[in-house]
Length: 312
Image (tube, rainbow, N blue to C red):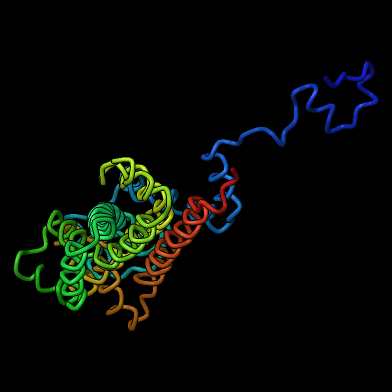
């Protein structure tokens, strides 16, 4: 038995910490705190989060705090069309007489809402499809992948144009069609993770002990694929916003009197040649920063959920 010295001054500093129970090297840091620390080390990701929170709050609050007519064009007949920025209209008016600042946030409310909803559908369907295909394997995996290859062979933007032309472009249908047609690439990424994890030792051990496939997917495949899932999820939201804007730019976005950023960019493009720069450059800047911010957040989240960066 080792006896403790009577005078703690004679004990080295590290041993004295152990005697008092203050050895920080033995303290277990919660995993969520480690992930938060990894995320906060990425300064661009922090700035992106703050920017997205600011834009989201503005899109949902500015129409209430700074009310402008954005639905009835007849009321704007008393307003100067294509008016330059002034104290009454900080970003001027567009070619229909709508206040441009209010229009940006009014359209952003629809663009962000539809983008996040469609992105949620995309990642959910893609994750389920990829995990089932990769983990089950065999004939099931072959059939599911050949079906996915057939989907991927269809030009995506032309598929969206065809479906919207046939079935219309209501808000609910836009969310559904973008969400249910944007998961194909995500499914292949998640399938690759499932194929790798099902052959690892702990998955094989669970199988040998009689664990069901659903249990292995829930306890092993999903937790160890969370890094790619989170990354793909953020990129899916950005892609959904881009596709919605592309449809709006082609004239197949949200129906008037509602609007989205793509529709506004299309209208502003035809006016910028006349020197009405305020109808496109402020919106284009916000749009690009939103998409880039989502991508930076996705990169930071990937690092945060990377198992190899977590201390044990």
